[in-house]
Image (cartoon, rainbow, N blue to C red; front, side, top):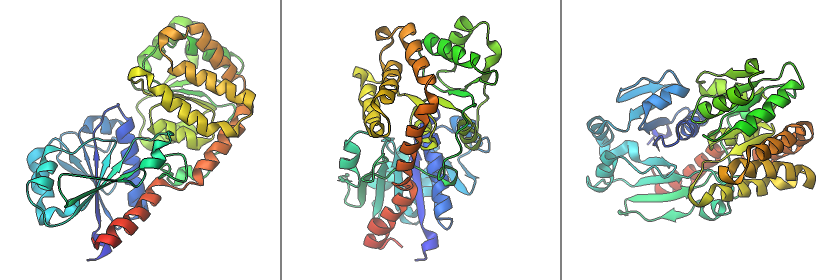
Length: 380
């Protein structure tokens, strides 16, 4: 079979606003960039959220082409079942199951009830983490209900023993640091009076300083804090519209400091070389602190002890329960961070360069697929 007939199908459920679909869409585009001869199919369950980061996406359409990528509505059982069962499930030869999203019922029927003759290869693309288990589980095989369905883990990460980060062309070279740029705020919900007060004081030091507030779950809580604590500086807060992925990247790169959340934005911040504070997704038993400390551990070697202590303090204050951190404590930790951006930037830049050396996740993934799936199973 000609290699141009290679198809890769990605699965994505939208769990946390834009993060999941943001990562998967970046993955799809990079796949198409690396292998333009490959057919890329994206199956997602929330076209409305997808439309927020790409206004070319239409709502309530079972199948559409967006930037030469086929986008399917996960929820359209009949259409997808009839489409993907054709030719002995040919479109399902290679499935990228992203972020433990599971598979739609119609796909489960095709894989486990329709008795396919072909072997289906499922590659589990897990959440990004700096924890050690990313290295342990990378390329580890898992069992399924059928010998015809082969499954393996592929772990994004921060070391050469993982798959790395998605590094598309515009992230391969660090942009020049814009020390006079605005602050970018994209967080989860919280009482942000301490952050707002710190940013207002920071803005007063230079007339061109602004705070760019991104749409999302933390938008209302930060805006409320700003209006309550920063009544004398309403013009310093700029409310951004929903941005497509390209404009999002451009906006991040022009900033001098980032307060960001989730995985997609955190990975871009890591690659930017811009000083940033990560607000991790709050989890039960405060497990987000485990993830935060793991990433801090990967970054520590690029900073002096005194500078790293500033980073660690503000990161832990951002991610600790609200009843443990006062607004005044959060304000002071944030101010100490903001007042040292020039000195901190070198370490963040060095960290970004170290991540580039691990290579692009999608290139590493395609190398794995070609070596361990296509060649070993004679899929083409």
